[in-house]
Image 1: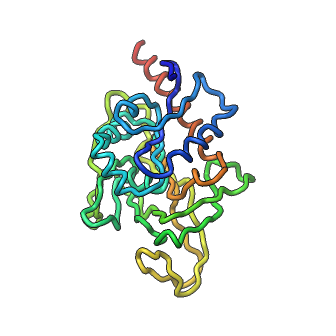
Image 2: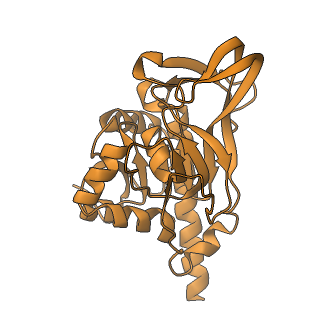
Image 3: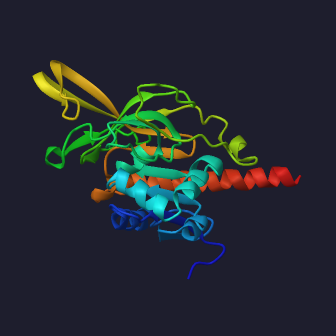
Length: 274
């Protein structure tokens, strides 16, 4: 039973790899110093979302997730959670697409986006599921001598470009609706216009090798770098699937960031009461 003093972290469970996230969150929370117990729940309804202090949107199929969220009356509550209340939210693969302000290569008719990350993503950049692969990644928050994180890329998007908060690019196929921060919460994230690159995928391609299966783009050979993990204020996006590994380091780091966020909100409330 969840108590009022518990810190509830949700994983959106409409479609995709949500159970794997729960398992890694539980593993990452072992030994983590927290002022209250951490509780992890699956989120399928607006009332379950309302109980959460933070949320993970898992990998899966972004168009399907958006459609189910809309039919479940969850889409607007998700936008409020991310953009109005500025709650910590992390999206992996499909989750990163949904949290982007703009997306290309969407299916016919496009799809709804939640937004929160001022980036434009290219869906399925590396092609079909049969083109899935793993690659070592250097994450910005890990120690320099730490072993690289093994990124699992399955029909993965990449960040094509970092954009202004207001997206006006006429070439963008889908945009997220704007939504202002609620109350005094924006002061907690004074630097939320800055998009921080957390990880890049660096790989060597041969002359004539496909850079993007989705685009049919061919390289001239040499090193190619793609942005595969970003952070902006309360929102984190990774184009790979940390939940499909046994490595809890990203989940551990994110939980630590969630606890920092709660502390900042508590300090803000104290200041407002003075």
